[in-house]
Structure formats: structure tokens, C-alpha cells
Length: 234
Image (cartoon, rainbow, N blue to C red; front, side):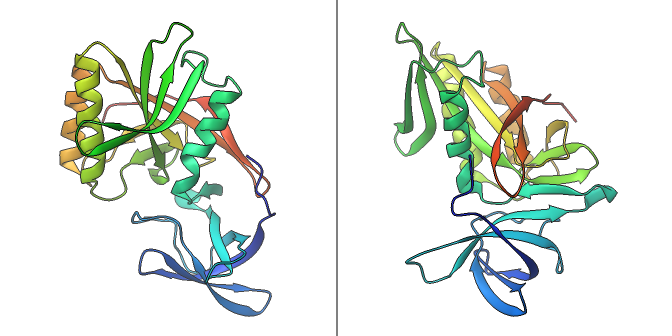
């Protein structure tokens, strides 16, 4: 996925009220949109380099897209815009980057149950369904290991329950972690942050939900699906 229009570099001053951040760019001080509802643990350090996308017709002139993290002494680019994850996966599906996920038909944002939606309903050439829920991963507290979630997520637990119901009914159900970091080789659950989600994950796996994780190739020019990486316990 090419960033269009091109991103511009800035320095983070502070992030606040979840969806706002103050930055310095070329000697000017601006308030920009922060498209990430999570805690952004370790990613909102004052003075960090960031990259912003210019906006037209919006109240705030820029949206924050990337930040440079130096967690565990390793410099990495992190995509903080959680709204990008589904589009990145959709491009990957169209390009055949998920070799064992069907892509004959791709339907996005499909209602399941009484009050939930899952990100994708895929079908193979014979019409067999495969349900996919995507989670954007940005947290890393140990070198090389990404973690989800970075804050308590009741919505995430509901998605796991819906996937479990589909798996029990004989349909293929996949939870796909998209790691929007350039420095991680594995993914695990942050059970200390949300024990309820960790328990829901254990139950979902026991009921046949597939857990997959993929890295991202990130630069200030583009962000794309990278190679698959392991999901680990503990």
C-alpha cells in the first residue's frame, strides 16, 4: 500500500485524548489526528520521529501514520493507524500473499450473530466460506516479540466468541494478527493486560479457530503484508 499523498516527517510532542497529538514540523506546532484507539504503549514518547499524511477537507490538517520506536534498543518503524490493517490485508488477499486463504470471493465487514461484524468473509471457487477477523498489533515489550492487546478489549473477546461459534458449526474461522512493526519475529497474547481476552483465546483455539500472524514491510513510502511469523504461547 503506497501512502498517498506522501507522508511528511514531524516530531511528536504529546498524544492525548486518544485521538489527538501535538507535533512540531519545520518549526511549526500543530495538532493532528491520532487514528489509534488503543493505549499506544511505548509509541507516544515525546521527541519521537513520526510521519504524517496530509488531509484535505478535514478539521485537522494531518493524520499520524508512522512512528519510530526505539524499544529494547532497536530502532523500528511502527504503523499506528489501526484503520489501515484491513486495507493492507485486502491488498494482500488480492495479490495472493496469503497462500492458503481463499480469495475467489472477498466480502468485507460482514454481520454475524446479533450484534457483531467480522472483517472478511472469504470463499473458495466452490463457495466454501472462511471467516477472518484482523487485529492490528503495535505493542512490543520484549525485543523481537509483538503482543496483543495493548489495552483491555471486550470487543476483541466478542469477536473470538463469534469465530468460535463459526468453527463449531464446521466453518473455517481465522484470527489474523497483522503486526505493524518492523522489529518483531513472533506474536503472543498480553495476558497480564487483559486476562479475559487471554482466556477467550485459549477457548477459541480449543474450538478450532485458527490463529495466524503476519509481519509488515514498512517504510515512509509504503506498508505491505510481509512473511508469516509464529504465534507463541506464554
